[in-house]
Image 1 (tube, rainbow, N blue to C red):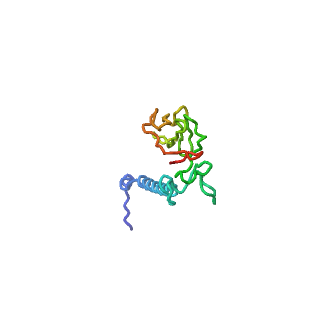
Image 2: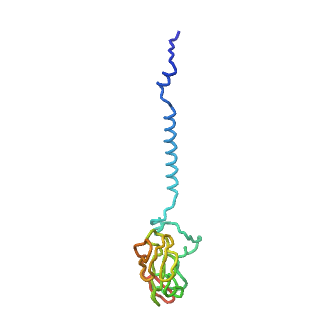
Image 3: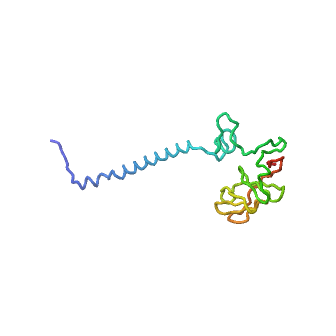
Amino acid sequence: MTDVQTRPDAEITAAQPACGGAGSSRRVVLAGATALGAGCLLAACGTDTSGAGSNGSSGGDFSNNPAPAGSKGADTGTTGGDSGGDSGGSALALVADIPEGGGIIKGDYVITQPASGTFKAFSKVCTHQGCDVSKVDGGVITCPCHNSTFSIEDGSPTGGPAKKPLPETKVKVDGDNIVAA
């Protein structure tokens, strides 16, 4: 005969820890590892346009305005006509397009004419939180995000939360064009 010992159910339960906790935490760890792996995979497939890309250009390999294959490239914001080659910069706008006492937003710039024949260019990116300014009216450049306003004469803040002026780019007139100096 074999020696069989029996134990009451209460002793069996106390001797064996519940498996629900161990199995549950194992599932949680595996689910977390799977999510982490998927996150890493997605991050590796993403594009970064904030730094220099592999082609050496600032802004990465991608453009918000890509050109068709075989063409010269994306629109750089230049306006018609040749700048003569001596100007040192590309055309930002036509002189005739900039109203006296006002300005326009074109490409990456706000181009103003605070006085007859005097042209200024500023970054269109608001110095408060990086929104693009949206209009030039009444001698003021306005950002729609938090209503910061800037002077068309020197880009200095005239109202709203912005404390720093819009960065200026030196420009000059070259024929019918306003070009970066």
